[in-house]
Structures are given as structure tokens and as C-alpha cells.
Image (cartoon, rainbow, N blue to C red; front, side, top):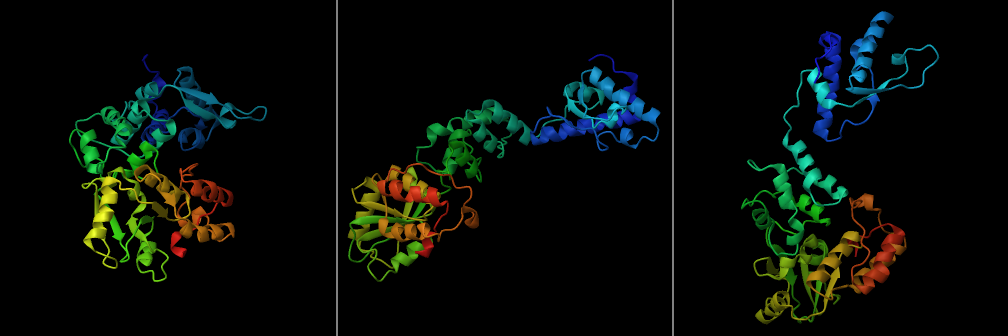
Length: 379
């Protein structure tokens, strides 16, 4: 950089430069970037705003124009009345040469924090659409001794592992040099990177609760919500006769590892049969894919439809359970649903197809037409 002009050392100019560099620092921390115009107001240049005499204002404005001549900033003026001075025309500034400005203020680049380094690495090295990159920028992985760019490079392997049955800590150890706890509390990052509603890797084996009727079963029904599952186990009118009932929280029923003995734990309800032949029959279906008609009943919303699609990946042929959904569908079409925002479901992602003909031809079109949801617990 050339030798700085003498006026840079003036207190009022030093204060102005400090304000500009403060702005640079804030933008660096937030990741917004500084390539935009901002108003030259009293916060940025107090001396100019508070000057009493015109001569002082003229001199102070000359310093702004000189900075533009040096290429540090760009000036843009608003519309002014005839005879008004430039500083009276609503001037805005844009920083053009941040490094030169920092040198003039004698404030070289500060040391970047983990969050800034993470954002830069994600934007430079993560192989993902920009929309997903912006989501990943919100979650910071900081491993001592490892560059952010290298950590991001490891995340690029995640897509190739999403079908592998494993726990979240097993995934972490595989990605991050044997360190199993890196992804603790980072399930949202994994879900965002895979563009899924929820993280497909659980913290622990999937917990399955099962109810087996005393009279036996020839079909299996997954129930999404615990309250509805418990009510079904106590049913006395035969609505669930012939069904083995299973509750698996959220998307866990559709986790690939659910068929693995080490990936899922199965607990049988004492309200139903504990007869060894019946429990063995359900375990055989779960572990060896013994063909048994399988159904799903959950909330009539997009999350429920995503769960159905996930279940069909693990238990091919799974269908939406019409006896449960029919009254919910009637309620939805009668205007008795609730707005997504009213139940904290505004961020649910739509789904175009589940693979189930009943859901795709009736339930999904109704959801898209009405724009409301119905909770399972009401039925």
C-alpha cells in the first residue's frame, strides 16, 4: 500500500475509519458480506454530523472524497436541491477495498472465530445446493487440530452412508477419525444435509412397543402417536381385531436398522398376549421379512405421509390404514382441520407421492387442496 495521507492521523478521521472497520468486523462475524451501500449517518461519521461550521463540514467531507479517490470506498448521493453540498444529499457509502481500509485504520484482519471459518468452509467445500449450504452454516463443528475445510470434506461422505444401518455415534466415529461424540446434538445438521424431515440415525437403538391380541394376528398396524397406540391396546369393540399393533416414535419405524437385532429393541405390552408363539411370529416378520400385510395410521399431515413413505422403504407394500384415515379425511374436508401454524407444523415439507395408492389418490390431494391438518389423537 502507498504511504498514507497525513489527514488519516486526524482524530475525527481516525474515529470515522474505526467506525467503518467496526462495520466490517460485524459483517465478517455474521457472514453477510460488505459489498453493499449504507447510509453515511451520525453513527458512522460523528464529526461530520456534529460539525458546527460549514468550513469544518467541507473539510471533513473532503476526507470522504479523498478516501473514494484512494479506492477505499465508493460514494453514492441521493437527490438534492440546487445549491446543496454533497454531504447534504443523503450520501451512502460502499466499502471497495476492505484490506486498505483496515491498514489505514491500523486494524489488520482480526482472527476469525470458529463460526466464520465454518461458514467459509461450507460455502467453499460442501457439495450441496446453496439452500442446503445456508442451513449447514447454522451448525458449527469445531474439532481441535482439524481445519474446517477438512471437516466439511468428511460431511460430503454422508450421502453415501445414509442407507447404512447405524447409530448417530457410529456415524460420527466413521466420519470423524474415530470420534464418536462429534454429532451429539447435531441430528438437525444431518437431517438438513440429507434434505430429510428428521435425522435417520438414532442416538440409540429404535424402541418398538408392540401389542399382540390374545386371539392372534395376521396383519401389522404401525400407529404414529403413543396416546393413540395406548388407546388401541385397550380397545373393546374389536376395531383392531387381527392386528399386531406397533408404536415407533416419529420416523423411527422407517429406519433401515429396524430389522437388525442390534438396531432395534422390541417390547411387548402386558395388555396383550405374551405367548411365545405369537411373539416369535412378530419377531420373524420384523427380522426376516416374513410376508404379513402391513399398515400405517398416523396424523393426517405431511409428516405422517413422509413416515408412510419411509415405512414402505423398509416394509414394502405398507399401506395407509383406511379405517383410521377415513373419518379423519371426512373431518378435513368438512373444515374441521387445523392450520399448520396452529400446531407448530408450519415447517413440514410437502410430499408428492408415497407409493401407496390410497394415500396418493385421496389423502395427499385433500391435504394440498384444504391446506390444513388433522391430528390422529382426535380419532
